[in-house]
Figure 1 (tube, rainbow, N blue to C red):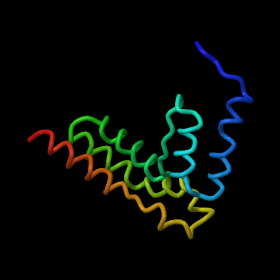
Figure 2 (figure 1 turned 90 degrees about the vertical axis):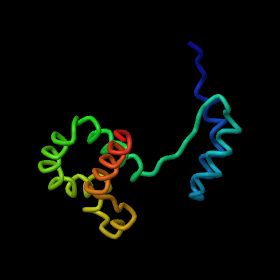
Figure 3 (figure 1 turned 135 degrees about the vertical axis):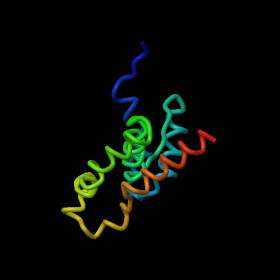
Figure 4 (figure 1 turned 180 degrees about the vertical axis):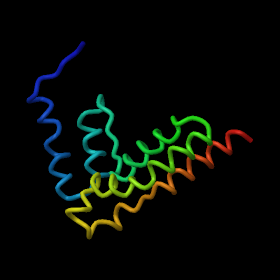
Length: 118
């Protein structure tokens, strides 16, 4: 396995890290990709990560009947998890930035499953 020392790695990331301070993630990832083309860079929002995790969870629940039973148990606790994951209990002013509901994700999974069945 090839390895790289810490200093060359840090040297190649100085400019992208400075660009992150400007909050221009696209530019930072573009520069990072140019500085280290051997490393794949991508960006995903916190809502995107949360949605992917919840989608995967719902999809693995099995057939629609099983999903419906689990939904009845999980959906009431979803808001508590959302509040904790996005720190909305500490920063309630950010709630609009993290607008995601269990019902929305559940419906997306159900719609996709229906499209695959037809």
